[in-house]
Length: 382
Image (cartoon, rainbow, N blue to C red; front, top):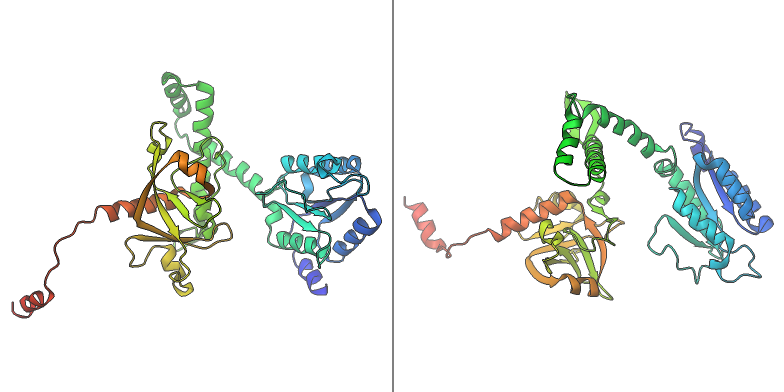
């Protein structure tokens, strides 16, 4: 406890914030949890509530400072056994929709709790676990120490960065007086929905400007910019529009009830075409025996003597694997959606690199084998 406390004493620059805990048991859960957390020396304020009315009031009062919330599932355990009928459940759903903070479900009724199955920001911890409330506090401490709690919250790092960088994008992307007007006039003349198209185009301009800025290291040495070193997890992304566009180039699917994984290689224009029912895919196999830790960076950079393979690194978001570009196959969109589940997607950069490698592999030519002994004779007797 002392070591943790001393660590926090050294971190005076950390932003203040609050944690709100809603539970029906004040004496056995709320008060002991608050006491335990306060002993850690974390600068976050711990606020307890045992009614939804009090919770809503505290949320309203502390919305700009909220860093995490902790919920029980049931308002009255002895009377209500269905968490979906509990007012606490409504508070959980509303908080999840309204705030970009981790939501902890700390309850003794997790067996039948099936909501938020694929939402890692909702963390479920059984009250009967061997660590007790420490299982919750340990995660909060980790998230706080890492600065994660200050990224997505209201007025957090991302919100401030977006506000600053988007302002710069707005003021610097259009150097001529009539640039904005000319772009809008072109959209108007094209006959597209003027308002919708204008908002789409200018939003992408701003976000692309921001991304370009984030990919350049801000540390300048020897009057040169160094490209930012991304984390391997940034090579993967979960698309937000899978309901409208269930399949896209660079998507990875896994067969239902099995291990087989497929990577979509069909060019984007064909995937988007309603008339194209077939997809070009290749398998992703496990690469445990190939991917050596000592040569990990060579595999990630594709700086290895493998012309038909592209290795995908293991990360917490995706277990990686070996893309075999020599084993292409065709599958229909209908069959893919029926028999496979969407897992994750590769970023556009990595997808484009793999497609380029596929093209290079397919464009290889060959000649009949040359007799090595005769070749050596020619070389030895010019």
